[in-house]
Length: 441
Ligand code: GDP
Ligand code: IMO
Ligand code: MG
Image 1 (cartoon, protein in one colour):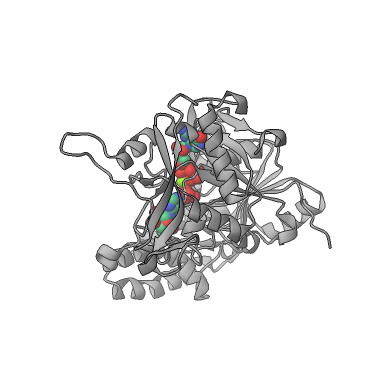
Image 2 (tube, helix red, strand yellow):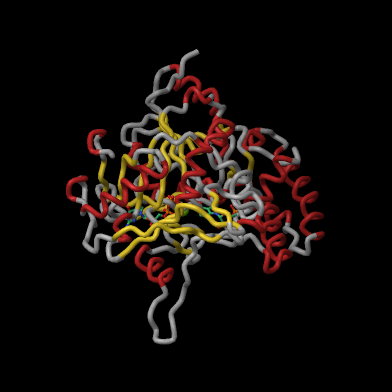
């Protein structure tokens, strides 16, 4: 069978999350019939800025602001009922009613109060070695899924759902107490949850079949990745990762469509690197200020780039562009094109070190080592490119970018072997350079 779905698109983060996927998805969704979230949950925070108004999506696909798009929360997503309802209500208050164009997979797992309590307890028990999770209950929910004990969205249709929920919370309380956490008040949790579950029930559907029908009708589909490849549970900086597969594998298992339907794989890359939470970060730059009150480089980029978590508000750690990680992510996922974001944030820099290899015990490597102890020791090897020291803010045409900015983009293309098709020059929808094939290196 030939590859179908050629007009479909997958958008993946190629770094440690927060690359600017929300903006890219919002733009692509304009010409899309169906937008699908496939993994992760309310740990994601995807920002869309339209006409100066900012919306942050956590569980809902970032295509929601386009009225023609059907929005699907696929089976690989973990769904916290309160988070979903809150997000839907907030959007409705802003004139965006999703009740008829949102579907939640009957196979999607529910994030329950026990999972959030377990997340908090596990983090506390780890002390200094904590992962720095978003505390949204994501890891414990996926654990429960893999243990084959959890409740799914389809269970909301079961007349005995309340009893099953009560039994499950009772069981999970043993685990919470064993970890030294605070047991869930079961009747209080039920009283809060059941009305929310009743509102989610009409949205529950066999989304895999809906997607198969959309594919048969040749609808244009957009698959929205959450987090980033370096947070992937298999290929990320384990154990400082999230608990899902954040690459193409997660799109397939989390949607119910086959690889033949994926179409173009678009990797989103921030023009520098950020990560939030614990774990190794080879290109990390210093934070804070020096004795004279001068901002350290990492702090300067954080403030200029507004690098504070869209979900937790935590300051993000900042560093130069790490092309070892980006190349690794491209290889793992067969990335066809790159959407480069936040180029404008680098405008004032006189020079731009780009990490092209790591040194590990005197040996140069160009891949990401699996072992944490190795990753914590690698030293980045930089090639220093000239900065452009002029504003790219809001630029829409390739020819209007300074030559040094064009050279920075071309360097990324040469090093990764992947064309850069979109360049972000500001948070708004319109602040984007869309490159025609001829303009590419
Ligand atoms: P996501 O999780 O990958 O969707 O990214 P986040 O929304 O967490 O963080 C990206 C931030 O960068 C958001 O505040 C966006 O509004 C902003 N942003 C995205 N693209 C650009 C860009 O090209 N330039 C600037 N200045 N900001 C951008
Ligand atoms: P988006 O989709 C950045 C990080 C957390 C933590 C680790 C595990 O907005 O790019 P979890 O709560 O998932 O168990 O936390 O993963 N993390 C993210 N970092 N962007 C995200 O999502 C993230 N989702 C999780 O900070 O280090
Ligand atoms: Mg984010």
